[in-house]
Image (cartoon, rainbow, N blue to C red; front, side, top):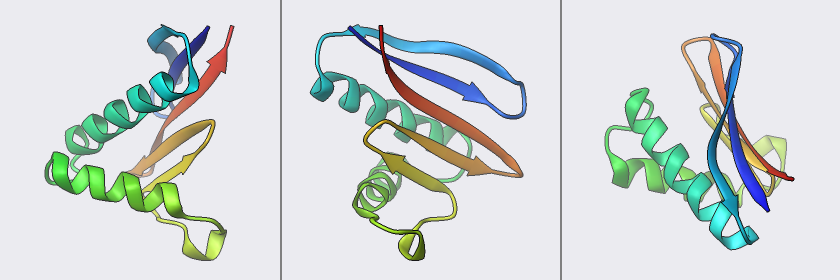
Length: 94
């Protein structure tokens, strides 16, 4: 089973965001929705549409020369940078 974990550099705490999820597709969809919601909450994106555009663009980034300052997405997780802090999401199997 797969889980989505979140931790924050500001508060130094970790929590299970979602799980157990049976497959990669389900956990990636939950990660996308969670990260998009958080982008709006943090004010990094103005609305869900902008957050989705950011997320899809970050998914396509291949190398560091193309990377986005605020958002990084990989097959195993994502991170959001804001105001000197970072929210991290990681897909784990247990």
